[in-house]
Image (cartoon, rainbow, N blue to C red; front, side, top):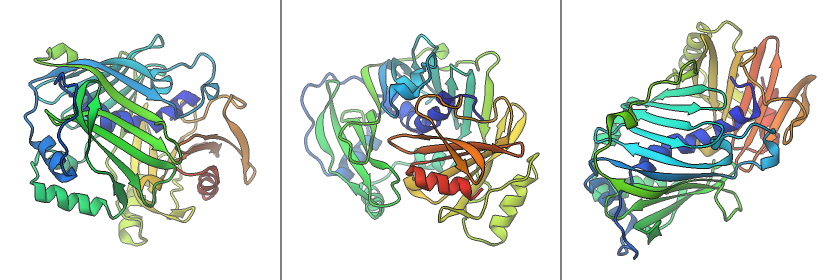
Length: 383
């Protein structure tokens, strides 16, 4: 999977960048210096969905990453995905998007082309690619009514605490902000915030907070935006020459229950692997919910997910090798060495979660979750 600590840490930031990056990038200029009028949350969200979309948008954006202390990143491993960076974004009229985080170590790129999301890590010249689920793509085309939005919010409120739509300004734009906090299955995540432009209904800022923290751990914010036609070359970016590609397939099982479905999914993934798949039915008290394959440089690995919500745990199994896995050099700052039933492992604990990695019998195992170290270690021992 990864040959260095920075590449493992990137997995903890990719979710925010991929899910929020393209949306934040399409904010358009309203030049407002006063908050918008107060509205119920359902109405504010409905108005955001129904607002006319700009023909195209471009501008500047800032990404802030306080996930780990700078001392945990090995010297010479500076990366815009780890240290944070400023950059640019473009959104075309057909929905294609590109977000670029600039740094001396290279520019990180996130692109959206139809149903395909891709992130390029410049430090390792690796591209991570993911196809959006069909259900998500269809849902994105629907225009909900106020009643439908309220019904959805009622369902969300069963597991999350939702704030009102708070009027305010973001970078001079009239905006609404909503804060959402998990009531259970939140792992180490305390809350998240999303602010969107009141005039055009597109996000301006997304942030994630750790439990008990008042400052965001991850934050993505548009800082200067303009709308108008976007050139084809600004969103049609070819894959970097010689880049390593990691492709994440659709899950072949969405069930954690024992039975034919789970066994069939296990057998289907095992048939594609060159090593014995572990993927136990449960780890650390969490049932297996999904199982999928990941392709890396012509080799195939497996990604299993346990539990649900933000407190889920993911386990990657891949052939050991030069790029198969690893937190980096043993003894690197921020890493802890531990023994898992006689096997040496390396652990990285952050404000939002824990990563544990080890190798055994030619297979690399990586456990990632928004859970305390004890829970991640228990999951690793189950392997």
